[in-house]
Length: 410
Image (cartoon, rainbow, N blue to C red):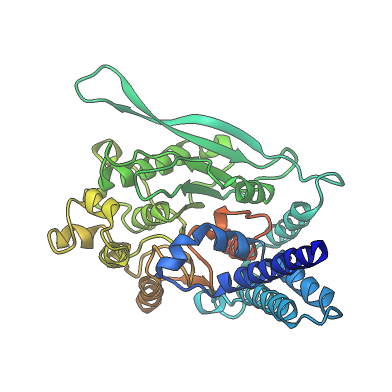
C-alpha cells in the first residue's frame, strides 16, 4: 500500500512537471491583445528573457526521459525546448533594415575608431566579472538640469537627471543620449531597469543623460515635452565639460518616454511644445530612438479599452478632442526634415499598436527621412527592462542601438 501511494505521488509529480514544461513552452505562443497575454505577462517576460535556458532545460528533459518509456514528458520537453530555441533564433537573426535607411554600404560609414570601440565594449560586457570586469563608467546621480519657478511662490522645482560618462581611459565618442523613462506619462522615474544598457553605451565612449521629467497631473503633455527640451538645451550648454559634440545629441525613451522622445525630435521649434524659457534656444537633435513608443495617440487610446492615462493626459477621448490627439501624435509630424529615427517594438506588444509603428516607419521612408525599424517576433512591451543582460530581444535591441548611434558619428 505504501509503495502504491509513493508511486502515485511520483506519477502526479511527473505529470505536474510535464504540464509545467509544456506550459512554459506555450508562453512563447501567447499573442498580442488577448486577456491571457496580460494575465501571464510577467511569466512570459521571464520565459522569453531566459529563452536560451528554457531551450536547454526542455531538451535536457526530453533526453532524460527517453529511456523511461514515458512519451508525454519527452513530447513536453521537446516542444518546450523547440519553441524556446525557435524564439531565440528568430529574435537574434531579425533583420533591422539598416540597408534600407542608409544604403548597402552602411557599415563603411561608421568611423573606424568607433567600430573598434564597440567591438571592444561588447567583449568587456560579456566577460565574467570575476575574470576581467568591464571598467566602471563615471556615474553622477541627481544632477539638477533645470529649475522651474513655482507660481505664486519664491521656491523652485528642480528637474533632476543622472549623468553617465565613459570610464576613465575611454576617449569620449562625442555623442550623448538623452533618455526618457516610461510609465504611462504618470508613473515611474529615472534609473529603472536601464543601468545595464547605460553601462554598455558608456563603455563605448557615449554620454548618457537619464532624465526625470514632470508627470501628470503635475504637468501636461506640453510641459513634459518642454522638460525634455530643457534637458537637451542643458546638455548643449554643458557639452564641452562633458566631452559632447552639441551636434551629436540623440534623444531616446521607452513607452511613454519613447513617445516624448519622438515628439521632441520632430517638433524642435513648434510653438505649442516650446515653453517661454526656451524661446530662442536650440532644442534640435541629431537622431531619435524609440523603444515601443506611442506614435499615434488615437490608435493607442483605443488599443487598450478604457485607457485612463491618455484620456486624462489629453483631456478627453479622440472623438472629444481630435485636434489635440493629432497634435500629440508623432506620426502627424513626419516630414522630410525629421532626424534619423530608430523604432524598436515587439510583435506581441499588447499596449502599443504594432500596425501604427509599422505605418510610422513607412511614412518616414516615404517622406525621405532615414528610418530603421527593429521588430522582434513574439516579444512583449518593456522587453528590454527584464534581465537585459541575458534576454535575446534586449541584446538584439542593444545591438541595433549600438549600430545606429555609431552611424550618427559619421
